Length: 316
Image (tube, rainbow, N blue to C red; front, side, top):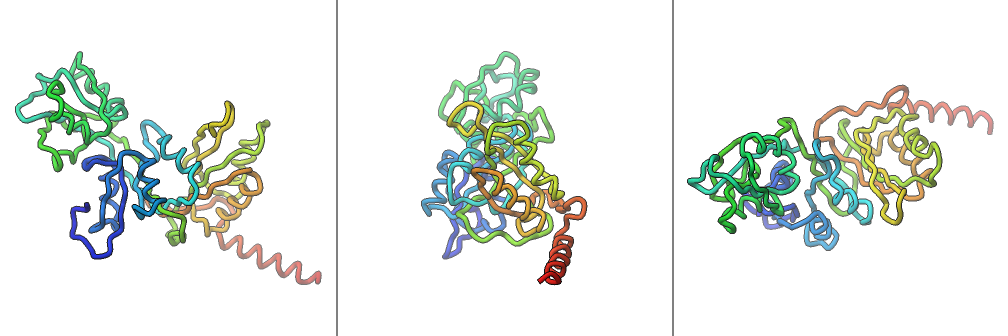
């Protein structure tokens, strides 16, 4: 449950638990989630299924890591599940502490519990500071801390900075991430509904399949954006899964679907792609203003339409 007071009518937020995960830190950034019901689940699939079944109104799931790239479980679920929409995004700085049971010192550590993704991001530090250690995999960053009390052969755990709020553990080394500027992007997902209002610093997400395997197909897809001055903030391919050589493209574009340039780009993609999934428009977490290059601002489109209406009217 949320750490704040409850309301009579609560909104349920599903997130990757248990308490103490980075996903919980992302959920803490959702202003509307304060005082609501927080439901920890075991996987991205469980979180999205809770939304579709009505057991949760929104899900907070990771979608992109600055170190590891796209989160395949989330990207694939969004591509293959109908009726979902992105309503927001949140950035969480990724850092880790090494924690242990009270009384354990760094020099005592020989076996370390860590989630595989977390372990990959602290491997250099551990190699330099805890030489010849053994790694045991945990199911989450929070579970790594919990494992300390369930397995006395584990001496320490790699976990999140807020884990001491939830478990009786002691920090024996702080800020051990190899990349001090690492971030993970989380998205807020709900059932398909009304788009969040345009803010001027927005992002639009789509998933695109290419029509045929031929030279220039990817270029033709990208030209839908380039010709309208729409900048891409992310593009990533994932296999469709039916056979080798078939890929879909996950694309984040700067701007809102109500921007004329973005709307025309999406309509162009619809004509081009055999399967286009529109995931929504939502405010950017970094607050960067969306500017469409060249003569591609919405007022330029409006002006052009008015001119064309006058031209064609004269010929009636």
